[in-house]
Length: 333
Image (cartoon, rainbow, N blue to C red):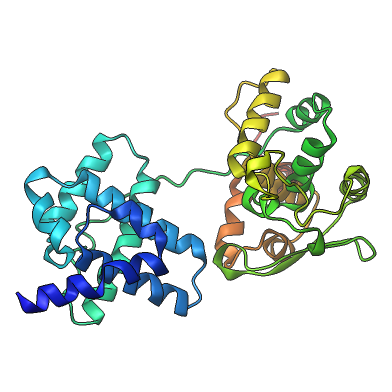
């Protein structure tokens, strides 16, 4: 009892002060919040991106909300009592909620990191997540680039310079929507024609190049700003206090323009990044160059784009097959 009281005192206010996002897990005991705070501190010391802390909070909240009612009291008090059966129930409930397999697998992997941390620090004998018992089969969907005529139709209806510029950055530089959202003017070197992305997904820094049309759009957009803002695309909402345009706002703008252009396919801003990679490969750029420009840690991520039906692949197939047909001569005369 004294040990539990000590844990409650240790993990009440200090944990929330250091990690205010723990307030979203208010239903957990102070002891649980304390060990979660320890794990978040561990991630920070290991230089994980802040998005990993956010992913941990989301995944643990999902686990808490979807666990069976008969187990809530015990696990809300002490997550170290989690069993493989609890994980089974969480996965089943996630599928009943119509969550995508990829989302479930991602959350499972995030929570596995948390339980592995508890195991390594002696709080649990072993992680309750067991492979292959808890393996999720995730469909390997191909990237969804926009067709050439769709790209033309999409940009034709964009008359706002700000929106045209931010979508051009994704199409010409392969930027992620989050990278455009937080892009500072200091990252752009007009003299060199480059744009630097620091500490992006996977802690990968990279330099991309400004095509002539995107450089022109950026200069025009800069010229329209009364004072040089910190971010290239600051929010127009006064309550945001100079914060950048949000990812949600960009997605909403793209949905608006897709509808205006009469494009019915469910594209997202990320589709422009897919289009960037596909267009480069179609134009003969090497996989290594595309990998660097996309900021992929592994060439395997870039290889997904080579599976698409593109002009390069078709041209090589036609050339090779013509040689095979000529050599074999199977056609009837």
